[in-house]
Image (cartoon, rainbow, N blue to C red):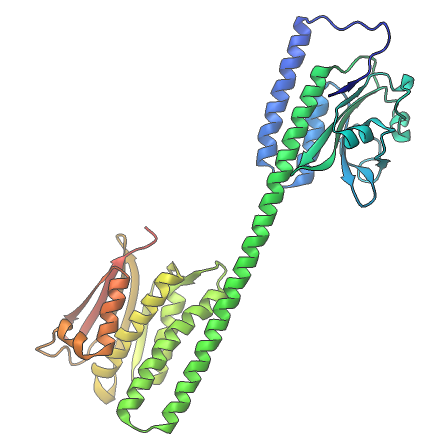
Length: 394
């Protein structure tokens, strides 16, 4: 319930056209602030705008927002209009019930004091007396169920604040409280997202390091065994591990968490495989396409398998040129690996090859995972292996 002070013998104003216009103007100002409060991203500009518009709606030249400082049990003039130098940002008031603002804070009730010079209940803070303030109206601002501060309009002029003015002020206070709650929720969400991104980067970094350790162990194993078949299998496993490790390496370095640039990934895989096959030249024509990790990893593995096949079987020991392409076309991603070697066997059958070769089984499985199709075509000369898959960005 509001605390309203009336001077003796004072009559209430009779509603008039001017009074109606005044109330309609208040509603317009309140609506305008509601839009600004919901759009606001920074607290201080929003609070400053609240004091400006609230003063305008109350036809007053003085307004202030008093922030409650619980550690010091004071009210700080955080923002305001009309006040002299040194008031806003530094002046503090006590929170006891001896002032209108303190009473509003402690009780949660709106307070109207139309004759501060005649007040017996409340004292007038010195800085307000210095500005010759005669009238004051105060409402509590709450956010997340906690007392956040007090919104106060002051006037040095004769006149009277009414309960309808208190309703207008409370509307402002409610909007400020909602805006503070929203900004606080957004801040917590941003912190949570930042923390989650940090964890994601750290996880990717650790996975990359763990895979590098596994690759090093395979390298040691290769030094212990000179069986060509075992060495070939270890090399294949090492290449697959390296493809996944490269994806995680780019994940934790990426500006966008969880996203990988396929040109960096594919060229990195191609360069690494080319270093292991010194007699081969691998040329890359890769489009800069950002993809999430769930898609980038199987694409990287697919490239590893197709390029490894070309290095193994296209030319033999003399080596040759292999072209790698990756582009987005008409809602599809097209990955191609082309050589100019001896071409496919005359009796080549992909289903039969999948039953006999782990690499071909992986190619078939990865294509299914990517909802794509793999073709091996005679390139005259050589072979062109092509993966066509739907562009997940579409």
